[in-house]
Length: 69
Image (cartoon, rainbow, N blue to C red; front, side):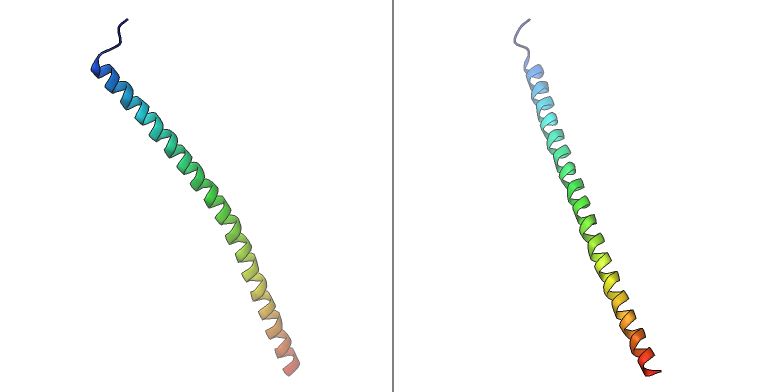
């Protein structure tokens, strides 16, 4: 078998570029998925903190109303 034609080399170069882009795309979306999971955890903690503050506020307000009555 010979070295190959120009079109064979061009096709192989194209396939190599596609493989590289595909690998970079997979890595990008893997990174995005990790970031989303991390953000979801952080938002969950923040939401829990907000709920706790709201509960504390409501309890303090109820206590004040009970003191007045």
